Each structure stands twice: as structure tokens, then as C-alpha cells.
Length: 145
Image (cartoon, rainbow, N blue to C red):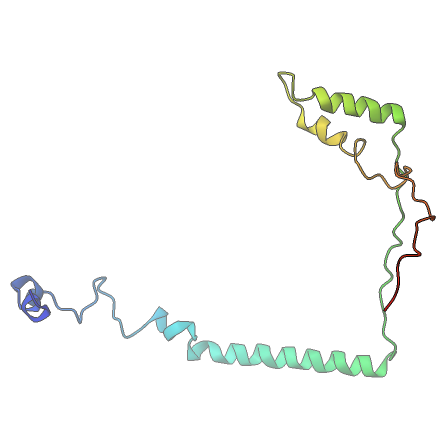
């Protein structure tokens, strides 16, 4: 069946495609706001007044900056302090034991597990490294080209 033969069916002839299914007039879109949300002419005067006020405010701010101090004011950043690890070896050991057995019980307390996470951290800033670094490496075989 071709498109033209479908269009000649009685049901297709009865339906008028030029009329809206909702009954509203298609020529007036978005209550006069125009196509593609461009807005209406009625709102244009308000937009223009708002634009003029904003422009005036920006000009006043620029004039105040020129008359005022020309130096750039940079806000002070807070000084970052390194935190000392506040856990003792006993507390670390008890945290390790707690975390080792935390999932074996019936009632699992995730907040308690989270509180002990900093105690069992593998890279604390204040603890000494278990690896000793020596400066007596053999470098005589290294040559530069």
C-alpha cells in the first residue's frame, strides 16, 4: 500500500491535519512568547531597563576601582599545619585487632571501622620508614655520554 492510497482512505480523509489535536491555535505559540523560547515583545522593555541598570552598576564599580587603591588585594590563605599522628603503638595494635575481627561478628559497626582507619594507615607521616637507605651505592660503572 502506497502513501497516496493510505491518504485516500475514508478515515484519513475525515481527519484534518491542519487542525490541532488539542484544539489550540498553533499560530500563537507559548502564549505569544515566540518560537524556540525567544520571548515576546511585551517583555522587551523590562529586559532593556534591567540591562541599563546592570550596565550603570558596572560602570560605577569600574570608576570606584580606578579612583581607589590600584594595588591588587589578594586574600590571605590559611596556613596549613601538618597534623601529628596522635595514635600510640598500643592504640594502633588494638585498632588492628579490632579491624581484623570486625567482620566476623553478627552486628557490623561500619562507623567504628571507619574511626580506626587512620590508626592502621600504611603511610603515616611521622613514623620512621622500615627501609633504610644507604648512600654507599656503587656508581663507578655509570658513565655519561
